[in-house]
Amino acid sequence: MTAKNNRLFFIDAMRAWAILMMLQGHFIDGLLDPVFRDSSNSVYNVWLYFRGITAPVFFTVSGFIFTYLLIRVPQNGMENPRVSKGIRRGLQLLAIGYLLRLNLGGLFKGEIYNSFYLVDVLHCIGLSILGLIGIYLLTANRKKYVLPAVLISITLLLFLFERVYKDWTFAFLPDFIANYFTKANGSVFTIIPWFGYTTLGAFISVLFTRFKNYKYLYPAAIAIALAVGYFLIYQSSNVFKGLYEWTGLELFNLILSNNYLFIRLGNVLVVFAVFMILRRFMTNKTVLKIGASTLSIYVIHFVILYGSLTGLGLYRFFNHSLSPEIVVAGAFAFIIVCTFLSLQYNRYEANIKSQLAWGISYAKIQITDLKEASTPVLRELFIRVRLFLRRVFRTVRS
Image (tube, rainbow, N blue to C red; front, side, top):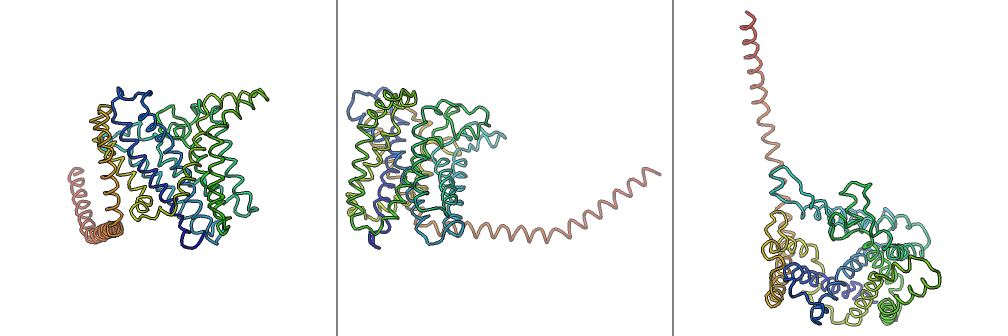
């Protein structure tokens, strides 16, 4: 891996693909009339299949990118500048996740609706980043194999025992905390098992960093990703069946009943392989800009589709009511609008932030000046009121 492609453009392209798939997936799933959701239709099944692998790819890529940037710097532990940046980023994603679920109408009534406490993808990615930082700090002074071993172990444990903890309601926890662990209250994503995809991405990034100077890095990575991906997609269920018949452990039978996590894991590895194969064509500037603008795209799509803050989104007016022809055309238009607005925002982001900073600074100065100017007036007013009250009380006593 040469200096020129240290950027790993194929990862940015994967992230761009995942966010665009998310846009069309949310749009079509939210607005398509249930009458047209025909499981016997091959086109619908293909769409449904790719919709199912979008989130695993996005979580895996997020873990890859963050960890790759975290461990490539020479500093270690808390001296690593990426640690503080990552903490700020994780908290920022959590804050934005909650902000997008606010409803101004409820706030004006003095209410915070229960939907505010539900957990979505931003909450999980933000918390996952904080989790990766914690793992990194705990293993920073250990031997080199400890970090990747811990990361892949977390992935396997979360996936193996998903059928055990899936039905737990975590009723002993306050709802706003329990929502991170259970979908019982309506959360879209939960930190378990989705943190497992993030740690998988982190594990892959560690391998890429350790073998970055290996001459046959990409051929080896592509071959391994395809082989393991094929095995997980087509053979993992047979392995769990064999383990259940051999050991009699009910855990393996539970996994066998719905082996979607390991199958999706195989899908993710195949997607990695495809993008690595096509990496030489993944240098289009617009695609890379989209890959670097996923947060703003997500926020814009949430506001337009779900009506964040106001409740006036497309979902409210066209919820499960459109025909395939309209919804497909609308999905393309939705993708174009969201990406265009995001790229325009990123183009002027520095100027917007400087203007906001200037506005906040100006407001602080005006408040300070007002305070200084009003202090003598308020003091004089207080003295006059006190003298007046004294005279009134003297008159009453007399």
